[in-house]
Length: 450
Image 1 (tube, helix red, strand yellow):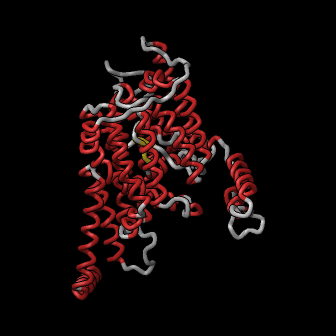
Image 2: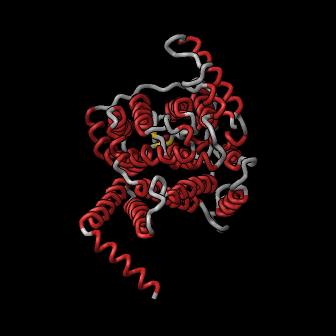
Image 3: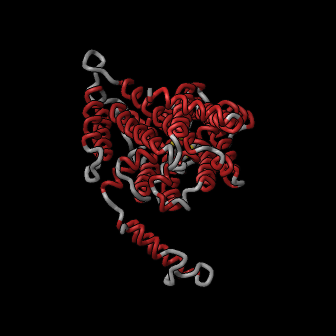
């Protein structure tokens, strides 16, 4: 029996040793805190530390790109990112990732949005997702979404991450030649790729931690060999950012509306499904309502201080799990690390993070995408075990249609709507002309036999 299972038994509502919150609140709080501290202590390991770095391939490129141009505050992003890591770890009790909103970041970079407009986009998404969670509307969306469509969203999101990982490696990659960089090239990407998959199933080798240390070493060498200012220690704190009405209008219309379906589907619904696959014992904690409220509050609070708009995400959770994270300890590590960096170094870290090799980040992002895409193999979960081959084929078709539209149009909403439309058409055909469907199946079977 694992440590978290022991904690669950001791802290179960039916246990005679469990103090009542209402009868003795002080005893209850002290007892719960002691159990949680014991659980955290027993799960401290190198694999958890390695797992905490599994989502850096998504975080660092976006954070650096927006920080250099002043579109977000690096200090606020690190401090609030650390706070959200710690809070979500304690709240969900799994390695719940905290990652930037990718659609908002893409629009911000391409359209040169101001910091006020970026914050407005985050606030707009935050308020809408919070409303979906607090009113339980998101639960209705989840209830009427077939399992194969959720798996299709996971598959599409995974493939999208793999494509972005390849783009990241190609950005600075080369095989020798004039533009070859000793610290960021195809050779390092290939070696990292081989290293990760040789130890893919090993729980004793912290692959992400080793790649991070290697990349950080390269970045430090580049900083001190260049004319850029190295990181310096000082006391840093976030300052308030209050968008104007015009900035809110621009940010909301240009960036928030495009991010909303991505957050609702991938960062909430698909994430809840993946979390319950990986951590079924925590299913009561990882509900779509709680995840929605968490995403909403992160942005309603953080975006008033210049923090990059954050969300949770199924890709981040998959990456952290693949690289060794098995409990909330991993994100507690990461959150504390971000807090220290934000308070002590703040914006002076921009140059160092900018030199981190994309060849290594790309490999880490590739593994995260592959792990998330593999979740689609469970597309029959919660379906009837007695389903015939035709039903299974239609379910798999829904997975492929949803993923294909999502990847092709680079839009989760289009993938979702397309999958739901095909699901509805399958249902109408089955309901209105069932005999034609069954006859077609029989004919096909006879043709195969002949």
